[in-house]
Image 1 (cartoon, rainbow, N blue to C red):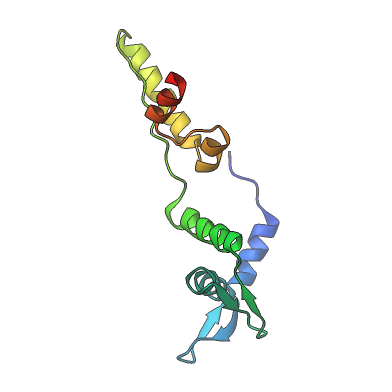
Image 2: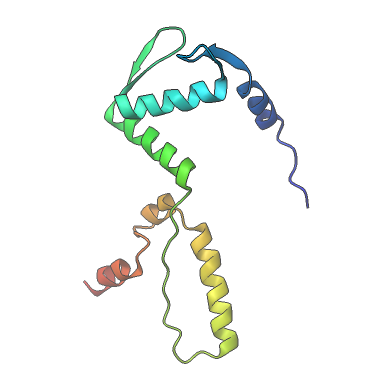
Length: 131
């Protein structure tokens, strides 16, 4: 089933490709590139100068949120390492468990793990249960 069109996403993408500024070499750059460079400047320098000349300083929380956002969008979400003892299961049962583990690992984001009080390492969970 094809994904429904997302009108706002399409417009944002189209406008993002418009050239609005020039770089240090005098070459035109797009809104997308300005945004990307501004995000990196914000994280690397603790502030960003907007095109209108206004400077925004990063607080600790702003900096952390921007750094996490960049990391998440560059590397993607971390994959959870879920381990299960499959001893005593038939080959069909093991195959089913493997498929379920893959599905769970694909849906476990760092935010969800943190909300559940987990780190993604099942040994940490076992240690907590033993105490």
